[in-house]
Length: 153
Ligand code: HEC
View 1: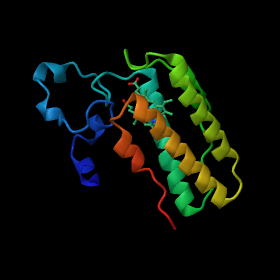
View 2: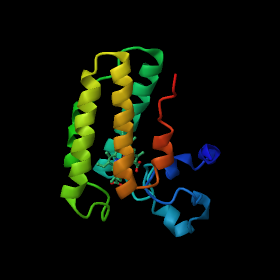
View 3: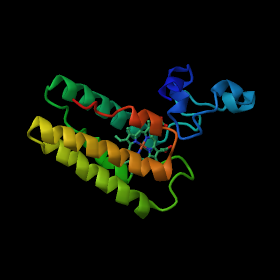
């Protein structure tokens, strides 16, 4: 199941589109429309923020596993509720911002969690919150986000 993510089109697969379509099968005029970024649709402000959120999750996961202090939630992630998305992605900003605010609240819980146990719980809850928004808005990255799960131990 997870093996598909080792294909060379891994980065394209992070974008919202159907991850099962290899980039090589795109018509060449589609390919030439690609910008310098990872996303065939270009790099919206929100897409860039998402990559930063992904980095933050990776670093947090790594720190949790090493039982070392977690990175601070970058301040600019507060821009989640206002960042411009790829055209057509968000129809109803209020609906989107419900998920966004929940995520931001959970990130605060992680930031302030004291014990390793509560940090692990808060991380898990934050990851679930990534998934619940993605189940509504942008399904492509879901397998990657599931891959950010904290192993049981
Ligand atoms: C409030 C809703 C919401 C939450 C919460 C959310 N996402 Fe996203 N995510 C989106 C939307 C919408 C896009 C599409 C952005 C665009 O194309 O403008 C996206 C795009 C992405 C992308 C693709 C970026 C690219 O390069 O195109 C990745 C990767 C991603 N999210 C990871 C995550 C991770 C990891 C989390 C949790 C830390 C998360 N997302 C939380 C809504 C959300």
